[in-house]
Image 1: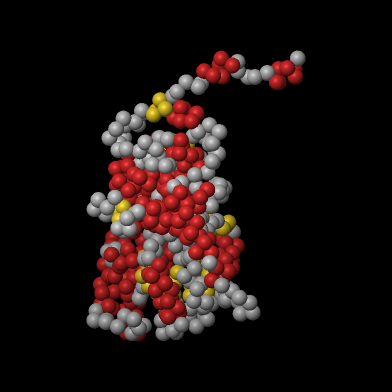
Image 2: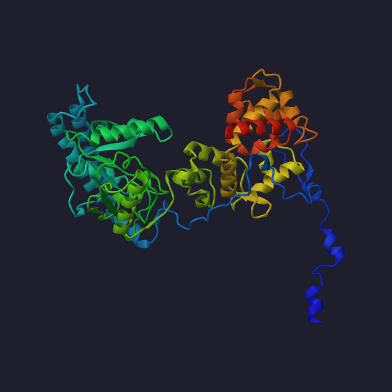
Length: 544
């Protein structure tokens, strides 16, 4: 009896077939035609072939998604004012806040005037600042200490001592708040590496120019290369001050140490690591997902803010064995994490960008948009942000998942068995929806295939049958009729994705740029016999 029950179907046959009725999905956004499609009927058409991979022709097998960390290294623990004690403290501190604001404003004004005087008439900024100008900058340095005092840092605990410039020309520190640059300017007066965007900030831009800042554009490879050469040049000359870098590249909450950028370690000079701690009970001083104005207000309304600076022993590149920049960075990161007693994570500046963009778009679980990729992925920050922009345009639901109709709408694809295969390739969990991490890692997996760019070249060659170096709308329709039979007015919207400059023709640059931003679309061109012949020929040439 028990065995019969276990073998019996859970639903009677009539009930099991009841769900075969077509379900209608209607989407009225983004197209100029009726979009009433039956995805249940489409599923029936691809029954038995649903496991086929639409990217087989370029050698892209299934992909894996790294497990997501449960740690959010950018989250401020006290973003809001909570508790009776905090509100009472703010009320009591209001008179103190007024005095602190006056002190803060005076220090900014005096420091700014002193810095302008030190810079007046100085033309040769490629060489070290003359000593008499440096003496004027002492006024600004003392003003920076008074600014820290106005923020509630009445005393600062130091552990260890800074190493001489001759011993350690480069200093690296973890980055938790905007307080560390102010402190290090007062303590060391170093040359710093900073984003180009900081130059336009009022007062701050003038002061960092006096520090002979090394500007870097994170999104430009040539700018990063130039910054590394400048770090090496200034670290090698004893007349320059020490070079200060924050290798994490962004601020964290101080409870973890994220992946290091390699700019401080490529020159191969001895480095003194410094770790900064902010002990607190009621107010987390980290500059995480909290605005600058709110952070400053909370600092002004504390009786006292605590900070500890610990100078660690110098770390030198290994001489008895090959010590590349990555290994040098790992050793330094491990030393700093041990001193802080925190864990190291694979998060990076890219994750902070993705998190910020997700928060700006009002995503409920913004931390789910962090990808924690290593440098081995070899994908630029701008490319990753483009993937997020594309995904957000698909209108993810509150759980951060995208349905097939929104996926097809953004990629300008009509509902078809082949389009379902592309979506199903990303839907590794087979839930009928995809997350950003699935979309990101699936797209990157396609993009990084050895044959991807050859496939793009072959696809353009096949579309441009006449050799005119441009693809027309009709040529695109003819090339896609195998993957998307019955394609008609939809081709105009798909053509507009490829026509980046909007001139009515798709050049090779347009074509390649579009497929790099939307690598999933390469599947549309992978099934024509001419394409396969061209790809096989180019693949053989590549091997030769």
